[in-house]
Structure formats: structure tokens, C-alpha cells
Image 1 (cartoon, helix red, strand yellow):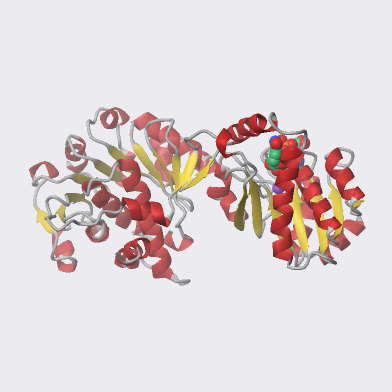
Image 2 (image 1 turned 45 degrees about the vertical axis):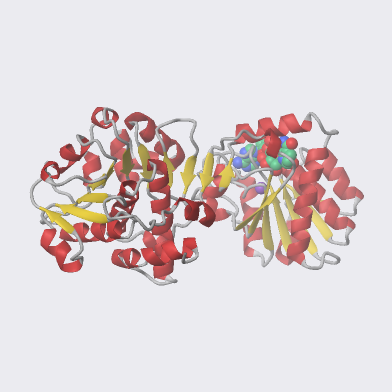
Length: 481
Ligand SMILES: NC(=O)C1=CN([C@@H]2O[C@H](COP(=O)(O)OP(=O)(O)OC[C@H]3O[C@@H](n4cnc5c(N)ncnc54)[C@H](O)[C@@H]3O)[C@@H](O)[C@H]2O)[C@@H](O)CC1
Ligand SMILES: [K+]
């Protein structure tokens, strides 16, 4: 599991650790780790050309101390002081003492940036807000346009550490060297798109961090542990039946795609309820098709309702049931929060940003600008587990003290019609197979993203390709066991 801690939590842990260390020791520890990563990237430090972009805070201090280490090993280091007179005093003295040079933002800075092998971005870290300030933008752009490797100190400058938003211009890095712990912004888009490869430097913060992180991202091993392996005595009922309520005369394809996902999610069987029965059976003869309403259909262990659904009794019936329910797409637009909160079994909502805005009675732009806050707010208001789709899919449970799961497997190729229908069926199937709601949603998103990556392989894909690659994704996670 990859864990991420919010800014205040990291600061509190740093304070507690610093109280036990000599003055400045923690920053020097961070800088030594940073310098080691840079040395590895450079290959040969002696004679290499480094430029430091130095802001007014401790993030700049890290860059200056790391620059001093590398200058002592023979690198030529120039530090562009973006906040003249306010650079970290100890760091600047160390750099100058090691033979580095301080520069203002004049022509020489740009000449050095153009010729640099490596640029260290120490403009802002966890203390930065609101994107790069105007005076930092031209040197940041020059760094990006040079052929240098750009290494972000702690975070790419200009991104919000706490929630992954980018509220102005930010400097895109090739590598981000972060200290002590991941911050949510390193995992959540759009900020996560600015980090390049992330390297975590241990500065001894571990014992001072709380057990429960703010956000976490499943890794292959976590998903492999959660996926069920049918035992010898399993039969289809023990493995769970998932009921799919989807599709309409207008959208018959949604029924087929939701069933396609459900068949690959580990449930023992799929019961389809809706007007798309003939289309579903033509493609998947193994489906149990029920006429009539969900209430009239046989027993299932979970329902997935919503993809391509027109008006009908489907939603009310499944809400009244005593099994886990996943609600997606059109069914979200008319959802009554009180009816969801009153349910005795878990509910999972899977909105995209537009549907999330409808659930909150907010503007879509508001959701886009604060996805972490939005997913938590919907989960709290509806008393449900919420999977907010997007370039980084987020999953929040109804309890406030449980980490938000960040899906690491997404790909922009997934932004294709019908891919959400596959995810609904898949996640519903995991619920029927007995997964806890937060696990069902986050494992569903993980396998779905991985299947899309395998299917796309660098080319556009269709939603049914994602469904077809779910078994390959499952094998990829479990090692084919
Ligand atoms: N606290 C500690 O013990 C440690 C802190 N470390 C470093 O310290 C950083 C945090 O330092 P600070 O709290 O001083 O904050 P930062 O250095 O991240 O940034 C705050 C400074 O940047 C300015 N600033 C804010 N927004 C800006 C913007 N949009 N554009 C330009 N300037 C802006 C502020 O005026 C302030 O002076 C961490 O990210 C990490 O790099 C590390 O050395 C590890 C130890
Ligand atoms: K930075």
C-alpha cells in the first residue's frame, strides 16, 4: 500500500522529530538524500552543470544544501534566488562556502539554465499555494525548455500538496524527490501528472506519523491479497450472484457492457433485469435473464443499477433490498440522500464529475477544482461509499477517518463511451462476491484501469475491449495463480 499524509500531519511529525535532533539536522538529512538521487541521475557529478531555482522557504533551503553537497563533489552550481534577500540563510552560506554561485534572475541565470544538465526546483514545497508567482514563471519555463533533467524538491512547485489541485502554472518535473512521506498531491491528478517518477527519501518521520494516512493507493500485492480464489467446494451461489439493472430501448448497449464487466468480477453468476435481455443473451448466453422488475427477480447478493437506464421501478426496488447496491449514471441524478442513508446494507455510488455535481447540488467546475473534498462530502452526505471517476479515480467511505483510496492504474484511454458501464458491472460483481464496499470499489477501479492499459497498449480502445481484458488484468495482478 502506498500511503500519503496531509500537510498539517507531515508538519506535526516533522516538529516532533526536529525536537529530538540538533538544529538543522532534518533539513541536512533531506538534502543529503536529495543530493544522492541527483548524483545517481547525473552519473558523473564532477564537472556537471546544476542550476537551483530557490524560493523563499525551506524548500529552497533543501535545494541549497543539496547544491552544496554536489558542489563539494565538483559540480558547477548556480542558484537563482527568486526571492532575493529571503533565501534560506544557512543553505545559501553552505552553497557559497562550497564554491557555488548566487544569481539574480538576469541574463546569466537564463544562460546557465539553457546549458544545465540538471535543474533543482526548490521554489515551493508543502508551503506553496496558488500556482507559481509571476516572477517564478519565466525561469520555470526556461528550466522546462532546456534539455536539463528537472528534479522537484519535495513537490513540483505550483501544485497543492494537500489535494492535488493545480491553481495556476506549475513546473513539470522528470523526477520528484519527496521527504518523509507521500503527500496526497503526489498521487492525485492533475498534480500527479507533474511529478515524473517519485522517489521517497526516508528522513525518519515514520514513527511520528499516525497509523491512518489521509490517502492510500493499492499496489499489485494489495489487490492480489483481496482477490478471491474459488475453493474446491465453491458453487455459483456461494460465489454470489450479481443482479444488473441497466439498459433501455435507447441504450441497449449499456446492458451488454455492464453484464460484460459483471461476468468478469468474480461473482458466480449474473442475473440481468431490464429490456435488454435479447441483446445480452445474444452476446453472453451464460446470463440469467429475468423479466419484470428487480423485486420480482430471484435473490442476488448485490445489485448494480443505472448504466443506460431509463425511468422505471429498478432503482426503488434495489434501494429497498437488503443487499449491497451499486448506483451509477442516470440513477444518480434523481437519488434521494435520505433513502440511501436509510438503507441497512452498503451502498456504492459511482459518479463522474458531472454526476457528482448533481449529487452535491454544486457546479461541475467546483467538483473538478476540489475532487478530494467532493468525494468525501458526497460519501458523508449520502452515508455511502463513493467512487469519483476521473483521471485519478478516488474512493471514499462514509466514515471520515478512513483514508481515501486513490487509483493508480488509470489511463486517459479510458475516457471512452461505455467504459463506466463495464466498471459498474465489475464492481457490482465484486460486491456480490463478498468484498467490503471500499475494497470492491477500489479493486474494481484498479482492475478496470489495468485492463484498459493492457487493452490500449498505446492505441485507442473501445469499452468492450476493457471488459475483454479484465481476465488478463486479474492474471497480471495474481501472477496467473
Ligand atoms: N519542516 C522541516 O523540518 C523540513 C522541511 N523540509 C522542506 O521544507 C518545505 C516546506 O518549507 P516551508 O514551510 O518554508 O514552505 P515552502 O518552502 O514550501 O514555501 C513557502 C514559501 O514560499 C512562498 N510561497 C508560497 N506560495 C508561493 C508561490 N505560489 N510562489 C512563490 N512563492 C510562494 C511563501 O512566501 C514562503 O516563503 C518542505 O516542502 C520541504 O521541502 C525538508 O527540509 C525536510 C524538513
Ligand atoms: K519544489
